[in-house]
Image 1 (cartoon, rainbow, N blue to C red):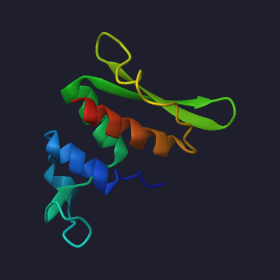
Image 2 (cartoon, rainbow, N blue to C red; image 1 turned 120 degrees about the vertical axis):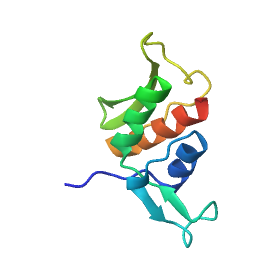
Image 3 (cartoon, rainbow, N blue to C red; image 1 turned 90 degrees about the horizontal axis):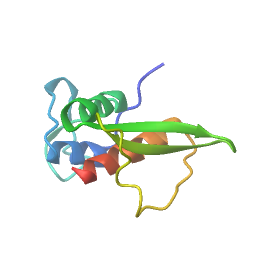
Length: 109
């Protein structure tokens, strides 16, 4: 089993918000116009970085009806953030919901 990497769009947002870990650097010059090299970490690493450095937790939940949703919570207050103005989206997989949650959390920073 392999870990799901963040998408290039998420990797670009991570870079804009200060994430840079050399061990995840890949050459994206032929795939993306923003730069030559970009850190493209597993989703779990991005999720942990958001928790530890930005104090935002992306929580993914499975819902009756066979779909996934995410919430973004502040640490340590446990307040829901960034959810009032977005539509409820039903994601087909945990990874898809996590990716969307990571992107939303990055946009809140």
